[in-house]
Amino acid sequence: MTQILEPVNGVELPDNPQNAAGLSAAGVFGAVLRQWETPAYKGHNHTEVWRTQIDDREQASLVHEANGSRYTDVTGNTTRHYYWVRHVNSGGQVGGFNALAGAAGQGPGAIINLADLLLESPELSEQPFSVRNIGTEAQPEYVLIFNLYSAVELNKNSLNPSICRCISEP
Image 1: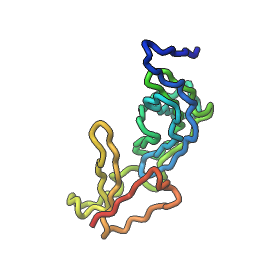
Image 2: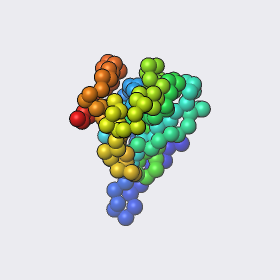
Image 3: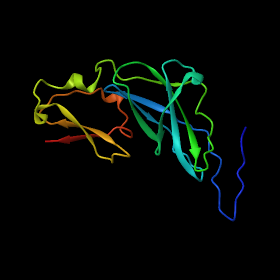
């Protein structure tokens, strides 16, 4: 059942949420990078991200509420998951899911998790990479930083530059 909100005392109410669209995935280092089209309706609040290991939306669980149009699901493994997203406006109304069938995503099979890449040396400067939060604690944004001396080869076809940023530091 869809509710229609009416203005109260001249306060403008948010639009009804659009159905989410354009959900895509890229697997990297034990995580699945999810991205969808930015909603264009007035009063958007957040987007719900739902996930399950089988392609059945009824069994999916809410795993994240994103303020933007992307989310990194750190699964730590190569298990295939199915995802759905839907928008929520500032009045709490939810829109429709992006699709009936889930959008599949999984981390690449070559790397089980980030710890698999660490060298035996505990010195950070001797590691092939580090992970740094360049966001805030409330809104984390993690980036993978490769140390220049390390020879780490990525499958460049599996990374979408619009949703994954790699930074090199000496």
